[in-house]
Length: 276
Image (cartoon, rainbow, N blue to C red; front, side, top):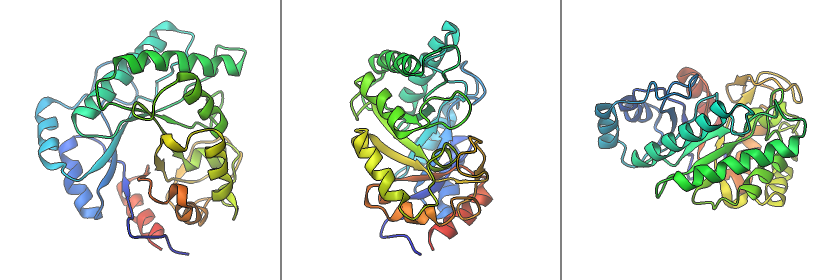
């Protein structure tokens, strides 16, 4: 099975410094990437690319499409106000910086139910804090919800991601969605099934998320469907396998930029697989 092409918009995750991204993408014959703008294990202002690195990237990024990934500590529903408010501040800073660098947004995991007895209340808390984020975004800045899969993570279904988008009342100009295929699969949506792409498209439309779709994290999964274990595999080397090719052939997802969250060497193998 081969992908529908003319536009194979697939690229790797590339760690900073930002100036290395354009030459690496040239080697991949790609214009799509993901990076980070701070230490992923912190909410504090550490590890942000310095001004010289930012300027070097901006001088060479013509024609590139990219997003940044937020800190893995981001948790807008946290009962701890330091984490909750720190997540707002970090998201705003990263989104505004990403916009100034010509990137399409910053993606973040929806959050966690931990500390709340009711899941719907936790989702509403995420939406409430997102409204604060929107008020502080500069023109062109955008935050991107990413579905989760482990433990008490929120957004493990398309419906839950849709609930946050609806309650936040965010416009597609300020809010987007990145669907991670590994997360969907291990959370219980079997992407290896032959009818999975059409069923997923139906769920996206039913949740009102079609206008918000911004990109895919096109990861295979090391663990089986429903395992709730977030272990990425190179496309074609996991439990989704050719399901990723079928997903890329589905019209709703075919033209979305796709990021492979693997090593650079793994991304090369994954892109070869996805090219058919």
